[in-house]
Image 1 (cartoon, helix red, strand yellow):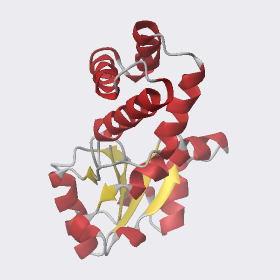
Image 2 (cartoon, rainbow, N blue to C red; image 1 turned 30 degrees about the vertical axis):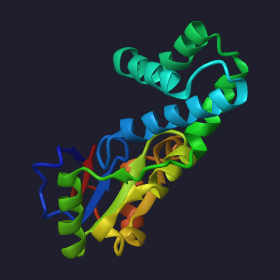
Image 3 (cartoon, rainbow, N blue to C red; image 1 turned 180 degrees about the horizontal axis):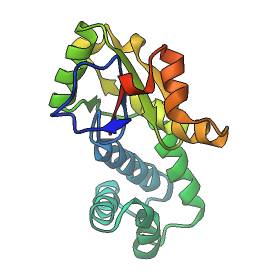
Length: 185
């Protein structure tokens, strides 16, 4: 199965399978809102750090050192107790975002073309299924809202855990050949 950038897509396939993060929308848009919410939660709970300062530090660490370093930096600089790591992880999975997640313009255009051409569309996403579903809940589908119920969602980690060969499984589920599907992401 081919993996291609959204800008140069073969529109002659029957099934298009998208990754969620950084393909439909910038993953960072979700994560940064989670950091803001965590900062607010921590300020309200402990009163020792300002929400904006904490969120800005989390953003800076995320951008320069990666997601996996964020809590440790906050713990070291603001002396956040280790017990809050679980709160951050829970928040990542179940956050009630203040802002909608906006689709990339080129992805929105492509999805519209695919739906109007009656193509089959799926999302195959990696990561915590609860978090990934939560992200989907906050996407601003705009004019694509009428099509979103036609998108099937699959979780890569679950399929691999069940020893399922992903590409043939998706092709079979949609009644197409593996050669007639395209992975985007």
